[in-house]
Length: 313
Length: 247
Ligand SMILES: Cc1cc2nc3c(=O)[nH]c(=O)nc-3n(C[C@H](O)[C@H](O)[C@H](O)COP(=O)(O)OP(=O)(O)OC[C@H]3O[C@@H](n4cnc5c(N)ncnc54)[C@H](O)[C@@H]3O)c2cc1C
Image 1 (cartoon, rainbow over the protein chains, first blue to last red):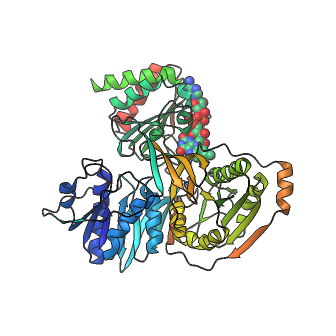
Image 2: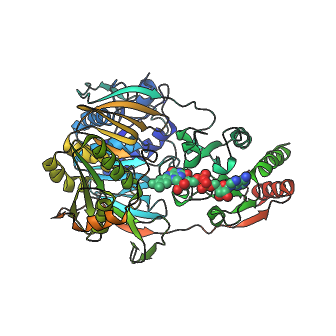
Image 3: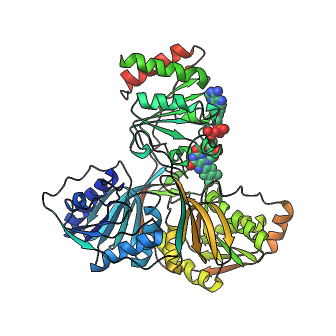
């Protein structure tokens, strides 16, 4: 069996789950296995939608996320025996899949760009060295694999409905969630956006981000931020791009008042086109840019907004 | 109380990487204590300063990893343990190597980096926690001890949360947890005399690296002068529309 962890937003499956399903089916076909899904996330689980994609759907109401509970839930579903477990790559999955991989003594293939099976072995490609190197890796089953979002076509429903199996709730409770600090979500999701407009410390303050939002909205994109901006409290952490933030790979990445530190580059250096606006012509970001303007962002950004509006008319 | 920081030595993000025979060659790179692990070392030191006890650094990797262990000792860690292993090892294998040592030390808590700067893995915390059968809190930005438990704040994909967790537990670090101190000269002198226990590890990685390549995308580097911001902005938008065709 190939087991897929299906992430959802309390209402429907996330796009990243449909990518994971595509990967799981590919492995299933090559290894002569069936595909089962597992739904764990909190809220109203989209059981009807999910069962359209798999032969068997395991469902558990686990309450708030903890790595321990999620790992226990997945291991419960995997009891029937698995060749591979596939999950969309996220901060959480890359933690709980570490637990799952250890418990199964499995080969862990993290944040993979592609994956396939040859003979009885599973192969994948992934980035390493702060996104600077592409690795080709392999492991014999069982493997535990996470799928980098935006790398894979979305799966179509099967045209039949899978059987639903309720999982027992694992008796683990060593982490108690005391308080959620929810961040307001607006517009396109950062990791899925095709255009990302990021502001750095050069923006000068949170007020100036209204214009970053405006440009992002005009281009149908999402707002990103550097760590310096997040630390200053100008933008929420969920918008941070970089080594310790999110990794994005849009067609167009616009960096406004961003110096281009390696830890920031690690989150965006695979973007198709990189644009930089910085008043310092020596800023490292220009070495990594396709297009750029040396200038004051407070003058250039309003002009950019006008120029895009003009183009759209 | 006993606080353990698990560390590795990695190439500095600024240093040049070369490929030699399908694999990354680090011989020309500057190697450092992983900056994400540095947060773990700093936190272990702060916890010890506040609550007393011992702060231990455990390093995994080839002989040269001793340099990174010495850096942690120079920052103030009390003693070091070095699990010597040449080559690549996946996080499950690293956790297998470290588990017996950590079980024997039986620490109050264990800290390690949120992501490795060489293998880009985020899984060591989870794998270690499973190996020790303890909880894990990933991407920790605040940590306080409260008797048998700890209160911690940590990042999720969207937002953050406060949790109370039973100890012992594993915490992976995140930027913002603290500001790591620099080793002082007396610290460096003292570190030379501190004990580093060597342990050999014979296990084999389950995941094998077959090939590594660097595809640095060559960038166009068309940089415009922004003295006339309106003209520069219009030209940029034209290039993005007509040449790059991304808007
Ligand atoms: C372990 C570790 C992990 C990290 N992870 C991340 C991460 O995930 N993401 C991240 O972003 N950083 C990360 N960092 C921090 C990183 O090293 C940098 O400190 C950070 O990216 C700098 O942000 P910045 O470019 O906004 O600010 P700065 O470096 O302060 O740069 C501001 C830039 O704006 C320009 N500027 C100023 N005023 C103007 C103006 N009026 N008009 C135009 N330009 C102007 C300046 O010339 C400068 O280049 C990490 C660091 C460590 C040690």
